[in-house]
Amino acid sequence: MAAADIGIIVSLCKRRGFIFPASEIYGGLGSTWDYGPLGVELKNNVKRAWWKAVVYDRDDIEGMDGAILMNRLVWKYSGHEATFSDPLVDCRECKGRFRADKTYELDCPRYKRKVAACSANLTEPRAFNLMFKTQVGPVEEDAALAYLRPETAQSMFVNFKNIVDSRWRKIPFGIAQIGKAFRNEIVPGNFTFRTREFEQMEIEFFCKPGTDADWHAHWIAERHNWYLRYGIRAENLRRYVQRPDELAHYARACTDLQYRFFPEREDEEKQWDELEGIANRTDYDLSVHSKGKHDKWHVHNEHSTQSLVYRDPVTNEKFIPYVIEPSAGADRATLAFLMDAYSEKPGPDGEPRVVLKLHPALAPIKVAVLPLARNKSELVEKAKAIKADLQRYGIRAVYDDTAAIGKLYARQDEIGTPFCVTVDYDTLGIGKPKDGVQEENAPASPAGLLDTVTVRDRDTWEQVRVPIAGLRDFLADRLGTV
Image (cartoon, rainbow, N blue to C red; front, top):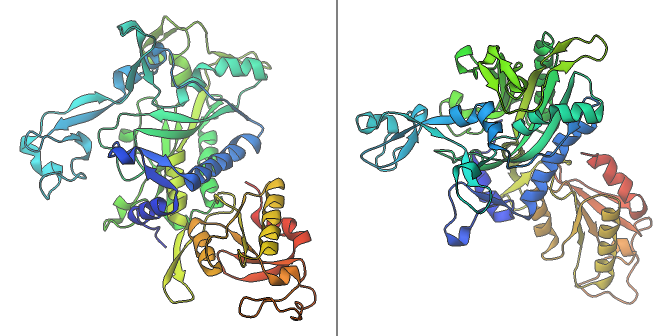
């Protein structure tokens, strides 16, 4: 089953408070987005699930949080100042600017044709550096030039020795980081798929040369299975092994995990694009940041104060570790989970109803607690008490009484809430009132329903009665943990 197309997801996100265009009341700013109340919860849950999988559930990964602004020399020796660029062309006719390697994919803004059809009017390609420049301090001068980091990786490389020394780490081990990165993309677009400000989830895993191929295979499998575990369907996720001519100059191998982001495209091959890359970066990164001369990479680092050569504490062997880098985007991952969770099924009235089948660990809200009638104070008080108890137990719950029960169920289905808990008259043991009025001698609820609630499953719409005393355990067993 193909995922929903991005246009449907954009509409859902705006309507239900997942993602809004940034600065919208002033006309927005191209390809910038704000995560709303539900979007920030979903994205945080994606990041939390990633962090748990790669840091908490393993014994060989340390976490860190590096600065966005770094010494300019970091970007000089990493190669970003000289080579982190895309080929740019201008069209003399429509005045548009485009990536030279994407002209067969991009539409001309003036004519109904691809940019490549304007080849006679395109300038020669020139390099366009993707790093955002800024100034550090009050004086604008060359010495004050800095960049907003285009990736989180470099802070992990330059902190390699700090973490080895402070955490008594031995090779193999890794460093994980989640953080903002910035790239001045020539052609951003497709909602949150490609933006100029984004959030990365990256691992730099350091290993001994000669073991790198095995570790690369290990991380490809680990990362592939993580997406499947949290709900991505196998038919919408594939591995793409980069050809030698596609690899970065320092990489020995790279496998992309690709997701079917564009199911609406007729050419199936064009439906896929990168979700995460897992690269074998060899010893390039620690070499270029290590003081001294490194003939292999034609680098002489005169500014670094540290040697990043690793000495094995058992064998005394010295070497520069190889790096395996699983690099994912939190925004792309969030988009993929949204697309894959989207489904529709006929409602009681026969009309299609949206059901967002998010994994419980990722769902922004785990449980909605609903009183059957908001004008019955006993129902309201009981529902609010249950919601508060679930929150104390660590289950993200909300209370809602702003519509009839059927409409409330539909709302929660559309935002991916796994369970709805309904507090009704049977919960109070007084039976349903006739015509909205509780009669003085009305029959009590059937035996056994006092202090029970109805729990409704989002995916099946099945309902069961559960004692309030056992509700927390009932939900916790089904929700699991992130």
